[in-house]
Length: 113
Length: 112
Image (cartoon, rainbow over all chains, first blue to last red; front, side, top):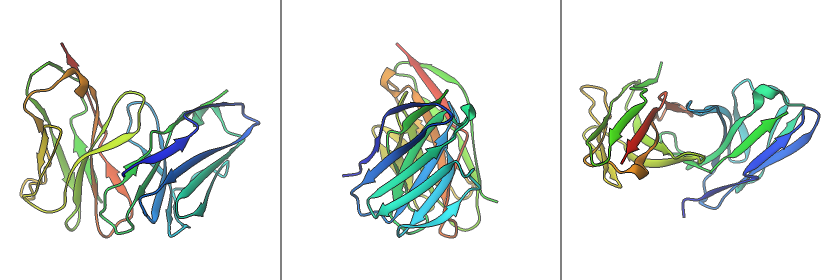
C-alpha cells in the first residue's frame, strides 16, 4: 500500500479563519513533508519531519504551523492567511534514508478569500 | 548546487505518437533520479525511478535510463494515449541532502 491520504480535498477560508489540513500514511515512513504548489509549477518544500521532529522549515511564515502528533499523522494549522496563500497543499512521506522516493497525497486545494 | 532542467513545453502530440521529454541534472555525488506525473486535479504520482548509473526505470509503458556520462534521465514512451495528458516532473534526491529537487515540469497534451 503506497497511499497517502489528505483531508479536506477542498477548503475555502477567510483571512481571519483558523483551519487545519490533515495527512495520514500507513507505510511505516518516518519522514513526512508539506509542500505548496501553484498551478503548473513544481512543488515548493515547506516543512520536513523526521521521527516526528521538525527537521526543516523553509522559512515559512508563522501563519503556517505544522504538527506531527505521531508517526502516521501530519497536520498543517492555518491562521490569518493571505490571498496569495491560495494553492494546492501536498503532503508526502518517504523512508528516512536520503535519496529515497517520496509518495504524495492527492492534496488540499486551498482558496483564501 | 543540485538542479534539474527539463523541457517545459507545453508539448502536444497526437495519440500513438512517440514521446520524449528531456531531463538533465547537476548534482554532487550519485543522485537517485525520478519521474513524477501529475494528472489534472491530483497530487504527484511516482512514475519511475533509477538509483544508479545505467539503471532503466520503467512503468506503464514509460522508460528512462540513468546516463551518468551525459547527466541525463530522458523520459520516453513508444505510443502515447489521451490518458497520458498530464504534467511530468523530473526530480533528483541525493544521500547528502534531505530534499527532492524538482525540474520545472513539462505539460503534455495528447489529442485523439
